[in-house]
Length: 173
Length: 192
View 1: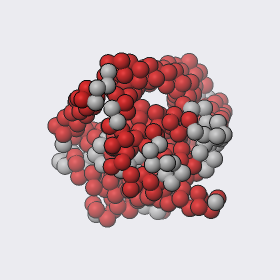
View 2: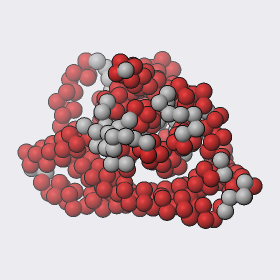
View 3: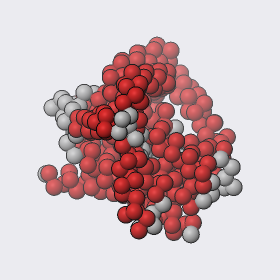
């Protein structure tokens, strides 16, 4: 697995450069042209990235989520949902690094092969950070009217989270 | 919507930490998290510049068109509003492929470039088009066949079978993407 993913990128680059030369493209100049576009792209997304990272991180710092979840805990105990997984499910659309950290904590505390460890792994792999991706992609082209994009994205996340629970139960118990 | 979420995150964070006497942390946070944002940009910058450069060669050589043609049966159904030879399709195809292989760092530049191409024939600048939203849903669902980061962390945590979660992840992410795309499809159809 690891060797395959290590081969893909170099092979991909080689293929493109070779094909470019074969098609008589001036590969160096074309690369510079594209790279310049990339630099402008970075310039355009910088404010969005700083805005999102800032808001998400002070939200995490405030410990609001822990407070709110403590309040809801009895409810979830009744449903026999492992409480440790909840912050991860809630944060999944907002912050990829935060959920990755929670997943690692779960691995340390319960082991990666425990039910909750497998559930956390599936949850991490099942969707991307919707709000961040949305802000980044639309921010890069200055689209502020996102219409129905966010509700649809969050709906997909919710279905993914529910699916992760159900599938982990089916496969591993 | 993003406007509201951004406000909500900041409002809750600051008011809640005032109420719980956590002012010290939030005060430090405000001063340091802009730096975290810049660090993230600095991490992404070389990859974005490198991949947009490489992909420009692929575009000029006509490789992206071939790739898009290969995925045309699928893309045609997902993006009925785009003509078959739209320049965005090659980048969309590359973005999907990179995401599937778990090459997130390459997927982002392709995705940003695809958005740029889609925006070129956007008649109402500042407003998302149907194709943009479909593409976004596809991306936020994050179809990943090999969740490389998760597998690596499982391995480090001493899992007996680090890759056993591939099948459950693929199933969950497929259900997530299919539900998102179906909802997107029904909304589009209802609006016509």
